[in-house]
Amino acid sequence: MSDSCPTPNTAAPPKTKARGPISRVLAPIRGQLIVAAVLAAAGSMLTLVPLAGIEQIARLALSNAGTAADIGRVVCISVACLFVGMALITAGELLAHRADNRITHQLRVAIGQRLMQVPLGWFTERASSEVKRAMQDDIGTLHSLTAHFFTTLGRALGAVLISVVYLFAMDWRLALVSLLPFPAFFVFLRRAMQASATHMDAVITGMARIDDAVVEFVNGMPLVKAFGDRGNAQDRYRAAVEAFAQTFTGFTRPLVASMAKANALVAPVTVLGLVLLAGMLFIALGWIEPLQLLPFALVTPGLCAPLHLLHYITHDLNNAVGAAQRVHALLDTPVLPAPATGRSPNGNEVRVEQLSHAYSPGNPVLNNLSFTLAPGTITAIVGPSGAGKSTVARLLLRFFDPDSGRITLGGVDLRDIQTQALYQHIGFVLQEVRLIHASVADNIALGRPTATREQIEAAARLANIHQRIMQLPRGYDSVLGEDAQLSGGEQQRLSIARAVLLDPPLLVLDEATAAVDADSEAAIQTALSRFAQGRTLLVIAHRLDTVMHADQILVLDQGELREQGRHAELLERQGLYARLWAQGHYQDTEKKALPAC
Image 1 (spheres, rainbow, N blue to C red):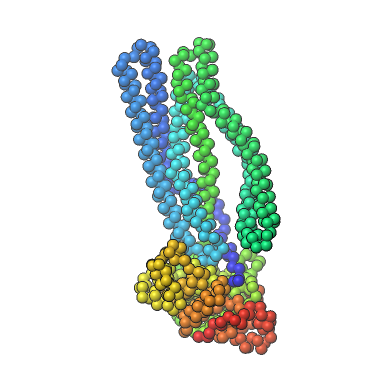
Image 2: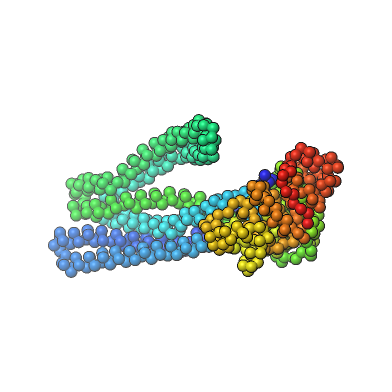
């Protein structure tokens, strides 16, 4: 296995931010969303005008003072307000969705541009699902915020505001009594949220335990089938599920009780019953006329739906806050500083000068390392696990920058070379193969998109993968993951073809054959032997037999260069290299050694 290479701690120091994550997301479209919310609120108010029209029509009809023309006028005004209100709501929704389309496009582009500038080492510790969640799922969650939250909020607040104003205009005393259930609703709702919050940490912990138990249970299934061990993993899974069930019961019991009371208070039938009881009392006391009860019976029960809606969208807002935080965490990812004007290397000699690096303070991985890669030679780096071998390779590829010291290519510090120019000089084949969902040809030509089909096929032949590609349903046009299914060794040879097409003078190999079978390794070794001719090679070796013919072997231990020389010289010294060789620490004599250039 290759050395563990955690992402370096390159995070920028925390900054004091006056705005929260939601405010930062909405900043470019805040004005549009405010206008959309106002349009939705005005539209919601106008759509309730027909309710007042019903009361007015009833008053005209019962008083015998209104003519047909008066009633017709009220009907026309009510219908006109209804359609104008619907038009305003539609305009608000359209504006909000256009603003949402603008901001989601900007966020996705901004994240993509940011990730193009972050250290390549940043990706080694993160699963693609983590980035996908922020770029796709979390931005989808923000869609609900930008496209729906503000217009929904405007409609709900508009309906509540116009209804309350109208009721108080009719009779402030009956309005006070009719609206009593709604403040009580929020009191019970607050209690429910507080009661559930006390158990939320336990619920999250229980879900995490179930996740761990599921992974253990599924991964251990071959052992269960092979050895009949039906107890341990299954019992742990069952225990995790039962513990979560008890925790969830404790979480839901106070929540359900409080929510049931809250919902009962603002049920339309409850509100209407209170209005009728209070109205009859007010009529008996002579405070109002029977006709004055009609608007309260029509309008007050209608307040229940907007208030429920406000509760639900507030819950969605909490999800949007978390999504916005994760999106901005990607946008704030530290990037490697790029040179203002890149310098061109003068030759291909690589010098590592007093190189030191630590992934976390106090835990150095490399300490004062110095060596030279002469053009046209093979240099192998060996050592115990955790010695820092793969870290050297990743620093040479500028996956991240060293804490001190420097690496030069042709006399130029890597930090002064533009990224594109750097990877024209340095190619790499790593143990972890990275392919994209595209055609085989596009994957080979990823670093050189202008390459012709003949050049792509020539690179594939040199990488010993051409014949396998021609067996695919559409040959080089087959799409990986669809009609092109390649084994690990075949994917590795595809990555070699990609490096061949770039034709770099310097090649870094980090145990390119560690995770493949013997047949695939033989094909890969043959491809690498062809490609290595005349190039400078840096080989990260985990088996000493593969580097016996290297021009120089660097022996690392605990981040320091302990020994340096050729295979025979190092054996004669009877040092660390000789002990590793004698112990057979990495040795496998059946493996084919990489021939010298």
